[in-house]
Image (tube, rainbow, N blue to C red; front, side, top):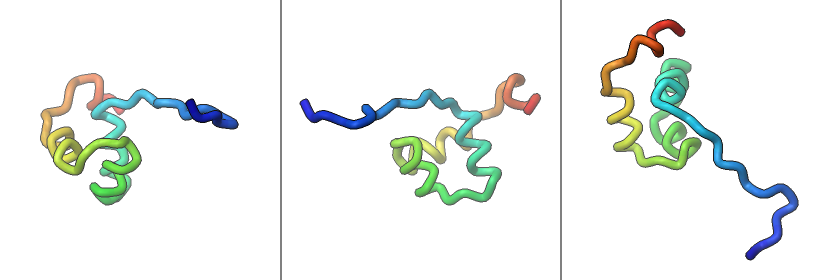
Length: 57
């Protein structure tokens, strides 16, 4: 096992985070890279209908 000065931390995210990044004018490829998912998954998350909790933001 490699030794890290600061071990990598996996951050939790949800579809609302992806939508927020997209509204800020971010590129799909950048969003996919930041969240370690594919471009296809980003497009699918953006196409999903919003939930009531997400509309409050």
